[in-house]
Length: 388
Ligand SMILES: Cc1ncc(COP(=O)(O)O)c(C=O)c1O
Image (cartoon, rainbow, N blue to C red; front, top):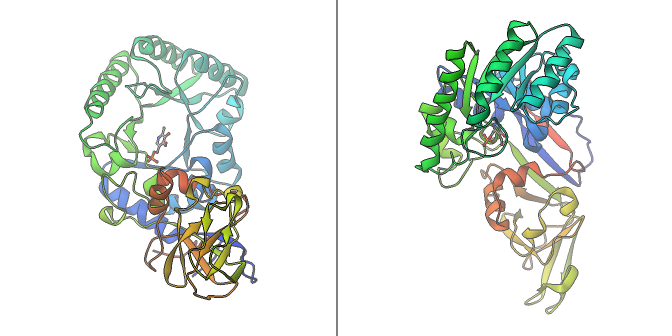
């Protein structure tokens, strides 16, 4: 096993181990599902909490030819780290770093006229064309250009292209319900996307890539693949939804394992209140284990009384409230000792819970569980530079 981060020899309070071999295998699996399409690995939000730069590098090694970020700052950070792969970023506000993005050869997404005006001005100042992708709102109702406004955006972007200020590299959109098999909005969005692409192409747009498929669409809707698929969560080995399958059903392997070292194990009598508010009271004499991570580390407070943790071969449940820096598990008389490993979630091979188990325990989605892990938890990237 090779390491890409310096790993202190002393046991860590907590760590998120990131298995880059699993990430590479996931990218290959996704590419095989979308043969004929290129793959953009979405690495926004620090690669869903997994560490943007090492994950982006691993994805590129496994054949991703595009990287996707939300913010321009995330895209520029990839360039600053030396990644020269095509990068698309899509979440802009007026006054954003358009010129820096143009100069760094980043593809930028435009959803409206204000953005086209700002990027053409930046291209003029930079003295080179901006690579732009026009985003269509085909029904998500979030970012993207409404069909009624599309002719103007397309027309003005083409005019800017003729003036040498932009190159229109892509036409794209995003699904609302691709993780709900058979949802009527899927076919409706696909029809709308085809119409909006056809309109732009009739006007003279020659995009390099047309794309709409996120992870669930990449995994289950081959008719949505077009020239490029854009998976995020599946790259990290997490299923977009338990409704459509487990990671194993798709040949994916979870990349993050979150663990901590017990800070204390102690005997307590029956009737002992545990953690703030005393929402857990020991039903009998028992042992308690102190897990030194809390909501400041991204452990949801909603896991109070429900979150599962593997300690000493058994699942234990968070006893009482999750506090800012720590929570307690009832060890039922077992005495694993301070320093014993507590695995919150991982691939599940050792019997540990998965991020999906935590999502269900907390009433959320696994995306949120992995993405919210805080900066105080070191990411330890393993299997960074070997084949496989
Ligand atoms: C525009 C866009 N494309 C692709 C993705 C990747 O989605 P998923 O993680 O479901 O694959 C996201 C994530 O939300 C996104 O915002």
